[in-house]
Length: 242
Image (cartoon, rainbow, N blue to C red; front, side, top):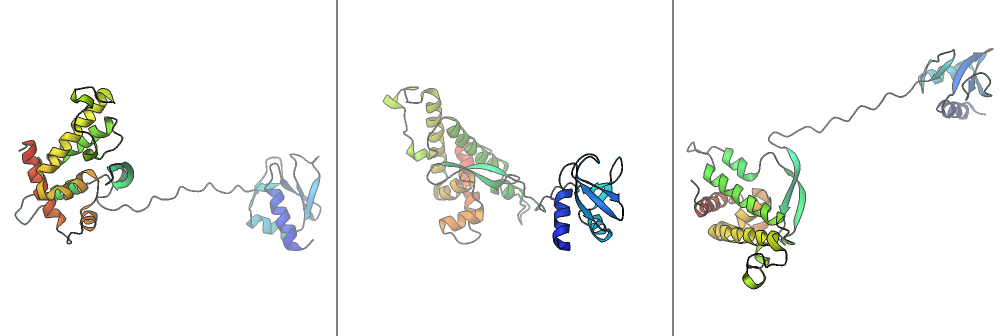
């Protein structure tokens, strides 16, 4: 047996449970049992023994001899470096077709919160408290729509009244009626936003960033911010906030 093949076999045998080495005569006996009654599987010379002290490494065995050193437990990989202002999480957003989808998102700061924290040249924040509250109220109606058992989150696709026009007469009962109420409130709120409706809808309901909104709607760069500000101001008036 060549030296390389002998070392490969020695390392494979040492990896087995209860395998160990002991000095025997001018060499070293490798056994695969717990005591000396186990058959000697391989006899190694001094050079091979020293090679095993390097790989896989040897440690003293209780009762005499040596066993393979256990590989140290792998350290947990370090988390990726964070980005200031970014807290990664999962957010349920509404797609343009009305379906909901869970997406990885920055849950630490939405575009609305980011804009509210920006101080303009006039020393005022990018959004007033009333405008931030208006965005939050719109989002709550969207949550009510999801919790009301609506098959779709596309409010324009839902009927405007229950079957027969009576309360609680819809197919889904009270939950269906709550979904219809929420859809009606969302329709009215978005209508109140006027020309800014599409931007408000995509930022506050679809969970898009300002940049993605500009790309989706074909707007010039850095224009979605001003449109969102105007839309949320109109929305705050609609809700009679501030």
